[in-house]
Each structure stands twice: as structure tokens, then as C-alpha cells.
Image (cartoon, rainbow, N blue to C red; front, side, top):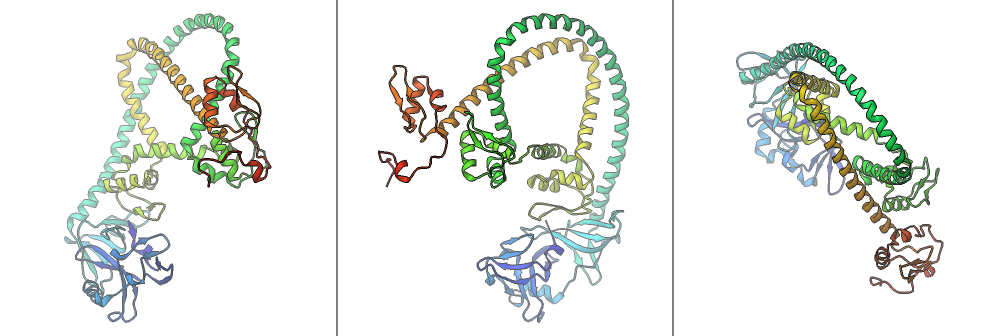
Length: 511
């Protein structure tokens, strides 16, 4: 939606020339179809030379300007009969009293809201009236049908007021019912938790005795094996942790966003390559070459963090959005207290508007569920608390019937969980190792080696200074010396002339 008042005085820009040549003076509204037809640009000579832009000829309505393809999109009002008739009647909506056909006062019209694509009027902002908000004195009258506009009063069908009354009444009833349910749930939950606490205390005491004996037996065996596994585990853990950090960072912050954030910043800490060489020194400016190299080596996330990038804010946003998406239906039937807009300025919900399925669908389209919840006075903590109370209520009713089988189920579940964890860890480790090796290969191709690489028969695969090729990678892998080759890559930038860097043999794609 867009708000009429937000459009007034917006500059009109011609897309073909980029020229700002006029401003929007008024909105052209057809009461017979309940449609916004276009905008009035000039009021000079009201009937003779008024200039208008039809909504169908507008390319975009942005937060700062109305864009049309060219000046040719501007028309003279008298050349368009439907516009000419509207100007002759000169119906002024602002200040008009809105009443139902059975005489109920809904307030004085202040503004209108319309669909930015079709021009269909979706509702009116009114001041005072039967359903005015106690805080703002405003309400939102939905445009269920067209208005019949007179000199002082505009009439809407009687069921418009009934619809608004039903929505507001629904809010009050929902609040009362919710209050009763919360009290009942709290009381029942308290009793269940007390009972559960007694049972749990007894089980913990007996479990502690058994666990103590098992722990002594386990530690004696584990102590013998721990020293042997420590060194191997430490190396694998470091590699796995580095891969996990990279995957987590890329999942939360897109690599392109990481690059855009870090470019031009000064490093707050040094960054090393996987083979131990320095890629970025503390205090060094971060250049595009450093970012590309870091990405090829799979350590772009390390450069991102060295530039001051943090995941906490992004993760918080993701969690808040996820919670809001799950609980957006809680806003249904509540009154919007503050305007909710998209990042581009489109209005999702207006102050005083009752949240409907249409509003929720629009909020989901633009990912503004959290903003809708905030606008109706709901927070993420409210949603989490309500879901926790519901869960506690359902769980409490099932505790008695499940206490006998809980121990056996927990043991079986724990064994199955441990098997799944080991399988997932092994799979993740395998994938991480393959991904790291692939990144190292991409970073090594075309670079020289710093040592002689031999196969199993002592044949020379690459000599010192020779460039790493796909064939060399394949030969090294067959001879099980690929890791040796990748650890021998020369990664520094050589200071050579173009002739020195040119290979003795021309490439297949060279000119």
C-alpha cells in the first residue's frame, strides 16, 4: 500500500533524461470504481490546461520520486474524459465526514491508502469516530465498497461498521480468554512441576550411585587411550573447527557480503593460510587481491572477522525473524499501533488497521513479520513464553502416563543419538576434508613449487620453480604425494618482469 499524503509534493522524474520537471499536486480518485486513476501535476487553468499522469503510465513510485518513462507520459486533463469529469466535480476527500448508511459516525477522513500496483483504494485514515484508538485518536476504515461522496459527508455501507466492531470485539474477547487460560495453565503447570520434581529427585539419587561406579570404570579405561588419541584428535579438531567456522560464517553472511564489508578496512589481527604462511598482517589494509586469495584458500571468513565482522547481530536477526515467522498468526485481529513499511517505503499496515490474513500475507512476502508483531505490541519473548506455557501444559498432562517407560526410552534414545552423532561427525569430517583439499588445489594451480616432487619410483613429477598443472595434481594424487605438493606451493607475489613470468610454451588459449 501507499499513503496519499506521502505522494503529495514528490518530484516527478523522466527516466529517459533523468530530469526533474514537476511535482505531484493532488490525487485523482474515482469514487464510482473506488480507484486511484493518477496524479495531478499542475492546477493552472483548472479546466483548460491541467496536467496529469495516469497510474498506468507510471514506471515506479519510489520513496523519493515518481518516475515516468518520459515527458510524453504527461497528459492534458481535458483530453481524458474520465479525468475531466473528476476535475469538474472537484470532490475533496480530505476533511470529509465518513458515516454509515444507518447513521453511525466513523470519523473525519484524513488520508487514503491504495494499492501501489492497481490503484485500488484499500482503506481510509480517519480522525475521531466510533472506533478511534484511545492513544492516537485515529482509526482505519477498510474500503469494503465504494464511497458515496456528498458535499460534507461520505457514506459507506452499514456492514463496514459491523466488520470493524467485530474485529475490535474479537480483540477484547481474545485478551480476556487469554488471561483466563494463562492463569489456569500457570496453576496446573505449578502442580505438575512440583510432582515432577519429587519423582526426578528420587531418580537422580539412584542414578547418581550407578553413574559413580560407571564413571570410575570408564575413566580408568579412557585414561589409557586418551594420551594416544590426543595428538591425532587435536589436529583433526583444528581442521574440523576451521571448516565448521567457515561453513557457519558463510551460512549466516553471504561471501559477497563478507567481501563488501572487509574491502578497504584495516586488519585488526593477522590471518595465516592453512599451510602456515601469512596472508594478512595486523594493521594492513584489506585489498581485493587479499580477499580473492582468501576465498580461494577457504579462509575468507577469517579475513571477515579480522576486519571486525561479527556474526552475533546477523544470528540475532535470523533468530528473531524465525520466531516472528512462527508466531505471526498471533497478530491476527489486533490493531496496528504504528505504521509498518517495507525497506522501499511501501506500506504493509497502517495505524489503526486491524490485522487480517491479507496483512499477514503481505508481511510474509516482504519478511516484515517482526515489524507487524512490534506494531501490535507483541515481542519475541511473548511468543516464546506463550509457546513454552502451551508446551508445559501438554507435557504436564502426559508425565504420569509416561514415567514408567521414560528410563528405557531415554537409554535407547541416548544410544541411537550417539550413533547418529558419530555418523554425522564422520560424514561432516569427510566432506570438510574434501572441500578443503579442493580449495587448496584451486589455489595451487598455476603457481610454482618450492621443492622437487617425486613419485614412488623417484621420477620427477615437478622440479623446483615449475608450475603446478592439472596433470601434476593427478600424478601426485596417484603417487600419494598430493599433500606434499600442496604444502610446497609458492604463494608469495614474485617481483618479475612480464618476460620473466612468461612460460616457455604458449598456452592453448593465448593470442
